[in-house]
Image 1: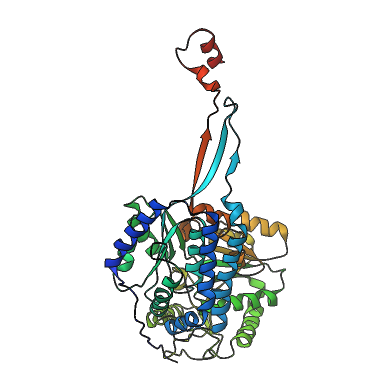
Image 2: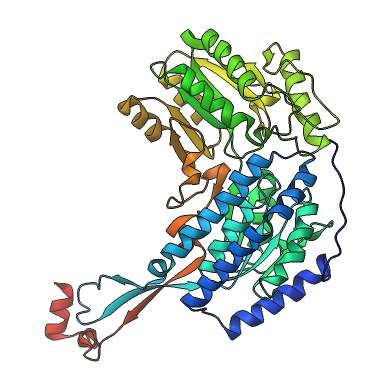
Amino acid sequence: MAKMETVVTLPYKQGVDSLNSTFNEQKAAYFNDPEPSYEERIRHLKSLRKMLIKNRRNIKEAINLDYGIRSNIESNLAEIASSILAINHMIKHLRQWMKPQKRQVSIGFFGGKSTLLAQPLGIVGIIVPWNFPIYLSFIPIATAIAAGNRVMVKMSENSRNLSKVLINISPEYFSDEKLSFFDETGEVGIEFSTLPFDLLLFTGSPDTGKSVMRSAANNLTPVILELGGKNPVIVDPTYPLEKAVDRIVFAKQTNAGQVCLNVDYVFVHESQIDRFVELIKAAAKKMVPDINSPYFTSVIDDASMKRLDNILQDAKSKGAEVINLSDQEINHRDKKFPISLVINPTQDMGICQREIFGPILSVRTYSEPQQVIDYTNSHEKPLALYIFSHDKRQIKTYISRIMSGGVTVNDIALHAAQDDLPFGGVGHSGMGHYHGSEGFQSFSKMRPVFYQPRLNLFSALNPPYTGLLKKIIDM
């Protein structure tokens, strides 16, 4: 099925012109009511959840239109259900997160009181990618609302149909001064990142993340950057290979591999490479017997299809072994790309130089764990590290010696599904965290307050510093 177009009448003006007016409206509202109560925040979180639940069918249909074919199962699980569960977690824990934290008073300040308050920052800007447009917008929105902020959201140019749906339904649940969505109509993204937000969250590629950070720097706007990364999988030779292969294929076929946390390359012990290829062929045919099935998601656009095809052609032309696991040709009409392997690519190949972000898997062989460590550490820090092993010492060594944004042991990407764990990158894969209590803190000003008691012992240290006072200070 080719990508279809839909037209939805917008309830208010969209585009660059409306950015400043909405920002100013939210800023004025923030100054008028800078610290929403616990009850208000809970009400807003429940409204956000209701907005998602009541409109889930239209939302999924819009995502499907944007992709061409987006697996309904993936939209249900990875977008709707995951977002609702995260919002439920925030509702459950918000009262505890909002409590002022008592801190220890330093020596010499007897009778004083130190407190840490979580207060709203003000206006939070969120720039959303196309690959999981609900999950990667609603969880940050919910976190920002839980922290008491107001939110402006810029959707992707590849999410035009979804953007229109969200723009239409949002006013039923929130005023513009609380939450506002923006469609990418041309120059919106560039202008959006120049607004003087109190916090800006961007999810996307490292190159675009650098541009966003440069724009934010002009306003000294703090940023949370959730970027991509060439995420490695390490398969210990003592781990059941069939189990590892099944989990790798499941991850790689999810959203046609268009996941920032997805497997980019896998390390297989040299003694197991033939068995690995045999098993992964069988697993791929079992899970994706037909890439033209509606359960296998389309690649997002023609440019991405061409990029993926070029990756394979480049690898072939430079001598790599390329294996089509689907035994099906590329379907350009529906943008369906077969799951493929590239065995032991060399560094001059494009597949080694940038994130794959599609249903292609690079496979590297190794003989000793140190080879894995050295290779991974010779590249930028990945967003995630995946280790298949039951050897606790070896697991600890890999976690200690290879830095990444997060780690899942004996599966793929599941650390990001834990609502009580923070999620974020490191180095080239991003900065800052959201999810869980750490996310609430990231979207808050953790404001230190010291209360000096009526009896101020510190005043005994007032000058002039002579006699006994000088001796005490010197001592």
